[in-house]
Image (cartoon, rainbow over all chains, first blue to last red):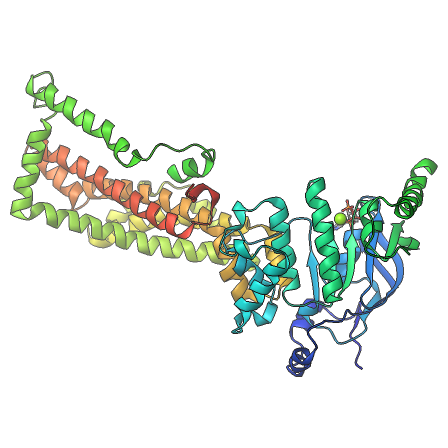
Length: 278
Length: 268
Ligand SMILES: Nc1ncnc2c1ncn2[C@@H]1O[C@H](COP(=O)(O)OP(=O)(O)OP(=O)(O)O)[C@@H](O)[C@H]1O
Ligand SMILES: [Mg+2]
């Protein structure tokens, strides 16, 4: 099996992935409907902006299909790590490799802002997510299916401006899902939502993750969200992974259960302990 | 500028359904008062002829074919000048908005030229072109160029970078990115430019035709002044106003059709 290695050497990863050979397409279509996630291997990853050393050596292995949450103080480099994984920033040193050959459509990112095109109807916004398959005959069908998955197929012909914040984020999720990605990275996707919408979105995320089996990487400020959703919580501090906590609570999980609360408490204490030292 | 008005109107502010008629109440009222004032001799006909006299003058000119010919000439000059200046401005706006190199090369020069009022060039233009058609077209094109250039450039530069990044993430190449993200994002601003340009187009044409022309509405007005035909002068002015209004409405219709996604243009 060929391994796509992402190191500091190649120029823009996005471009090289987009140019991958046509034979890769065939392999893609033969894949079973139930998509399997990709495993992820990060070695000695470093990234700085000017003098600001943001990531100072991240070593991390994520098995295929795992749900990982990343928490840490504001500005600790969570988004940077996610953007590196998604190929949106250049790596300074180290490498990120996936367990299989990857194409642009295999890795998707969802941001805190829905980033929908205001001038495209909901359905066309979802079609954007198909990447190079946008022009194919079944594009509309696939987009409709993705919209059904997030429960918004009845809004297919609306403009994004008439949707609520939570609905917009669901459309963004459908757009990310429509290409059946094998890694889905979330950068605080629920950060701007109210508490109730947040909970229903968390359920939705968990459901699609279970149904589709992609590898999920969720950056969040909310430790309780992290322990509710993830198999594993990573705490980033000083540019490194300071803690790697496995959440051994069977699903479906009960929010606010004692086990989760304990875990949440200990992670929060770890996060705050740095402050007391200062 | 009315685009700005309509964009910045609060969402729930709308005139009732009759607004198609409401807007004509004031102009019609003014004409009625004017007519009464003329008939009663409150306003002497030397100063301002009665609306009925203006209409009569219009009717006579219409029968002689002079009116239609002059309107057509002016309309033709306005549209061709607008098309030439608008396309060049749009092209430069696109080039400088999309390419750093092109912007570095030309933007400073264009900004410098912009500070010269284009009507100040009239003497020079007459020396170059005489009172030929090309003189008018040149002036209109020059006047129209800058609002379209500046607003296209501004529109492209201010497209949400997050949307552009999104487009790239989802594998859009340059052409598709332009078609799906950059151009639609710049369109509201481009329309602001078009509306400004339409205003400048009429203004330039009036001045140019008044000073240097042998046909057109401005020329018709100047001729009439020489023969003291004040009703024709007033008629020309009214026709200018009407043409301006028509151009504005046309751009509004286009705007509504292409910006229907914009919250400011959505029906409630
Ligand atoms: N493009 C950039 N240019 C310069 N500095 C940057 C850039 N992107 C991020 N940084 C810096 O890198 C550091 C980490 O930023 P990052 O966005 O990854 O933090 P974060 O952990 O996601 O924070 P938050 O929780 O507030 O979103 C910050 O100090 C930020 O100022
Ligand atoms: Mg962040």
